[in-house]
Amino acid sequence: MKDAVEKREDVETDIQEAMHDEADAQKNYEEAMKDAVEKREEVFKLSVEKEGSKADTITKLQVACELSETKSDQLGTTQDKEQCIHVDCDHLLGHIERHVAAPAARPLQYPIISNLSSDTVLAPRNLSVLSVMRLT
Image (tube, rainbow, N blue to C red; front, top):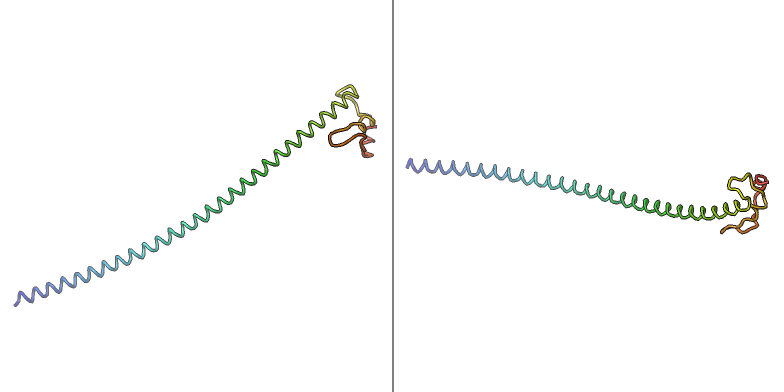
C-alpha cells in the first residue's frame, strides 16, 4: 500500500510539474505572440512611413522634372529668338555698312536709319526724339 501511496504522490507531483510547465509554456507563448504583434505593428508603421516618404520623393522628382522641361523649353525659345534677332540685326548692320561704307563708322545719320526696313518694321521708321538726337 505504501507503494501505491508513493506512486500516487509521484503521479500528483508529475501532474503539478506538468501543469506548472504548461502554465510557463502558455505564458511564454502569449509573450511571444504579444512581441510578434508589436513587431508587426512596428514594421507596418515603418512601411507606411517609408511609402509616404517615397511618395513625397517621387512627387518632388516629378516637379523637378517638369520644371527642368519648362526651363529647357524656355531656353530653346530664347535661343530661337536670339537667332532671329541676330539674323535681323546682321541684315540691318550689313545695310548700314553698305550705305556708310565702313564697319567702324562714326554716329550714323538719321536718313540712313529711318529708311531701313527689317522683317518686323517697315521703312520709313518712326524714331523717338531721343534716337533722332543721338543720330543727328
